[in-house]
Length: 496
Image (cartoon, rainbow, N blue to C red; front, side, top):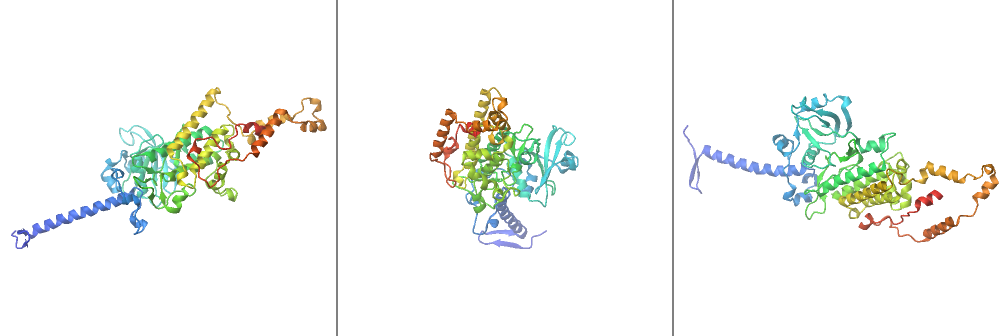
């Protein structure tokens, strides 16, 4: 076909046919489209990784992380579900089909359900040769996202992004995912022990011991410390008992990274974000300002630690009104060591030493500080809990095995029995003589007891150096003995 029309570009002195001109214009348009698409993808990454786009924050407000984006904070991760489908190599986990997920759960049998919530339903299952040829038999837990639930593609993708690249003994292992059509599924390692909430508040007759609670506290502290200390700091943002999973040996792992978010980098002091999380566990400064830091997670850790110490929920409307909010009621008592021993979970009676219990309570007190800078780093929390665990193990070994380290007199049946035995007359024939019994009761004190009593009165008269409830704790408090710790407290209590 003869070209009948020529377009002249006089400034270049070159002639093009209409077809050639259209071809060049098309290439230029494609290049401009590609540049615009790259800009949208960068914004999409910010949104899919848990950070809100400028539209959600207002036209005059941009997130700090968006303003000062550092190259180290943009690893090779999928920007959206479409990107993940086209480039499955983004993640280190397996990409399963929906048909394989159906086989793994025996067509999502109702009796395979492990739990359900606002996100959807979790099923137990197994992936083996019948599901995928050559696959080693693996027990799994499969989370099926409810399309009408609280979590959407962004939260689902956040879990794939974070758990698909992180590996730590105290983070639940993500084995794979499924994103066929509108289906969104996540495949985790199976945790036979269920979640911490069930063991603390729902099970009857089987109580978590002190040592198991401290092990769980240490394990979860290590998990948070791993997130905060990674090259690209990650803030978990939803630390609570239902998100802590246990295996058959009570090893604890963090699960559910749907709300996880990139932390501040470089000179940034915080990340500005929409407030998300669980009421009762979220740090007060985050709720008030939307400013998120690693110390926001420390507050949540303090709430869970307090729940484990007292055996109470963070929020419990069934209790007296002043005790509805556990932190508001209990935190002031954590700074008064003798009061702490009275409010600890009575189901742990006889399983801890007063010194250790008060150090852990003091740790919870600091983690729950209203001032974020008054809270310890998770690395410091790990250090303290490891030290306490080592000291307790040494004490047991030195005593020749598992022993009762401490028995709260308030709940001690043995103590009351011993007191009855002490009050019993030495001579059986005097047992029915009430007057002699009364004379014996008002018998002068033993000199040893008397001197101890005067010493006790002097100690009570001596002014204390307790910190006020509003004053943030010093860093040394994390490692120093409690201010009013009394090593003779056990003997005093038994005499009373």
